[in-house]
Length: 255
Image (cartoon, rainbow, N blue to C red; front, side):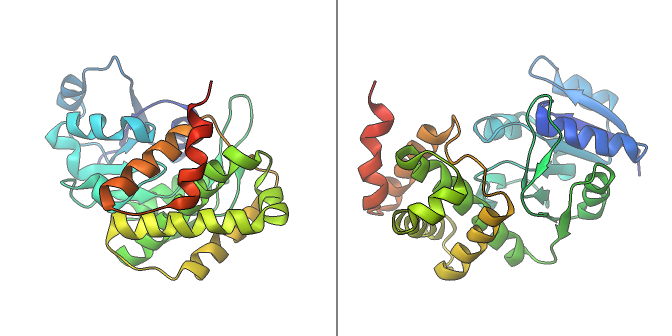
């Protein structure tokens, strides 16, 4: 097995993984928007892993452009990730990222990041080298549940934050009924997208555990309006009536 890692997307999160793999003794080969991936794959034909560290909006265009020789070696780490997002990709390694990395700052951990797939051990070792805690999962069902928990956290905090602003701790302590209504609709959406029924209360409990891991985490990032619009588009296509989310829609379009 080769000692080469291909890193597609060299942002803050990609940089964390690069450092981890370098500390393990791997060569890391960055792929940027200007890189010819076909040429790169010709010269690096047998990497140990191809880490796709682009944002969620860029995932599908990147997956469609991945050279065939790399497709069986992918590692995915995007937000709002679900199994249908990697349809046609054979057995990827998947990690749900539960740490924040901003320019000029060390990574800030919320809770351990779950990892699953054929190279879960390798990815976990890389995270360990940069002091990022992790959990290795053992089944597809476990992975799906963990991805849904992360989606619930991201979408609830971002979308509720459009109204409340503030931190996740304040969201739960000062706006709990509203946050719960949003969370319940996000679970409905995740059920519609996956075709799987979930225990809403247990998912919300796990979301709250993440709140407690970093109560000062800001609710509303710059992606919040786009997340709301995407959630409502999905709801419309699935025939779901998410009334709480719909009441927030005008706030994302006003100037």
